[in-house]
Length: 263
Ligand SMILES: [Ca+2]
Image (tube, rainbow, N blue to C red):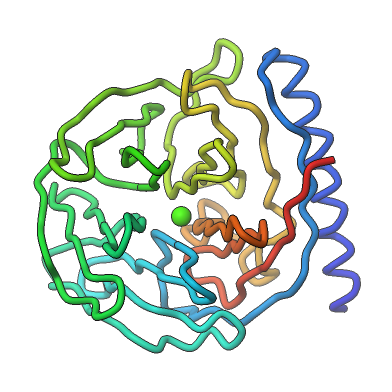
């Protein structure tokens, strides 16, 4: 069964390349054709309603959501074991996380507060207030990039959390909404699109979609037939050094490690 399952996923990944290729033609964007190959599957805590995922020195940092169940976690990749955790107060619904230097920024859904933690000790060092909802967050080396469930990406100064600009994400003429968990990958922003198992690839300079990744093949079998399920693909972490992508979903029992390469 395992080999059949992996084969199905492999076929999906081949489709990724084709879709990216086609999107390149349609949008005339400088999209690069990508190849994703599954290197490994690991356990993932099925109690984590994954809202954010970041790679850091051989480990993953994860943000789990829901009121009363939110937390910031450090996760051992190969075992899925949570080795460090800060539970969030029940009045906050944790959302995306990103790393800026030695600090972890963690958004909240509707509470309009970003918590900043020391990445080693998980000590809270600062909070910022912002307007609107917080969904996903990533870091391009200069600016924070934030999604709020709309088709807009917002850019913030990480020192002040001042809004510096926005772009609207468009695939051709069509706007792409419900942008959720984010990851900065080789100059692109990758975003989970909420309530789907697709990842959209975005040029952050102009908001243009450069490709789509069809993640339906990754969805655990027990969730596939559920209509309007909450257990969607959500959580992307990137290791730029090894060009590896880690993906999981909300309450998924599994995490995938993928090798990214240009065709
Ligand atoms: Ca991420």
